[in-house]
Image (cartoon, rainbow, N blue to C red):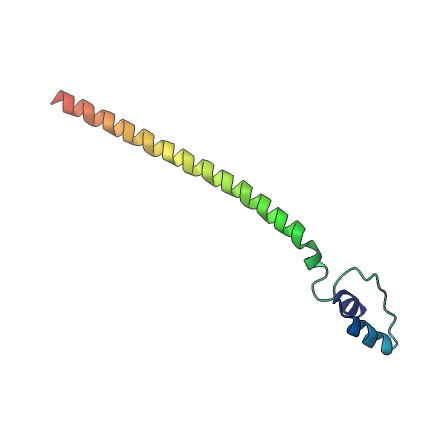
Amino acid sequence: FTAMATNGFSETAVRTIKAFGVDVKEDESKCFLCEGTFEKVDEIAEKAIKELRISSSSEKEKVSEKKEKISAGFFILFARLSQTADND
C-alpha cells in the first residue's frame, strides 16, 4: 500500500499511511495498480507509431504492386482486343 500512497501523488494518502505507523519509502518505483505502466506511455506510444509506419509502408507497397498487376492486365487485354479488331 505504500507504493499506492507514494505513487498516487497524494500527500493525504502518504500522511494517512504514516499515521498508521507504516514506514513509507518515498522512492517506491512502481504503482500498486498499474505497476509502472503509465510511466512507459511515451515509450509504448513511440513503439506503436514505429510499427504503424512499418505496417503502413508495407501496405503501400502491396497496393502499388496490385495496381501494377491491374495495369499490366488491362494493357494485355487492350492489346489482344486491338489485335482481334485488326484481324477482322
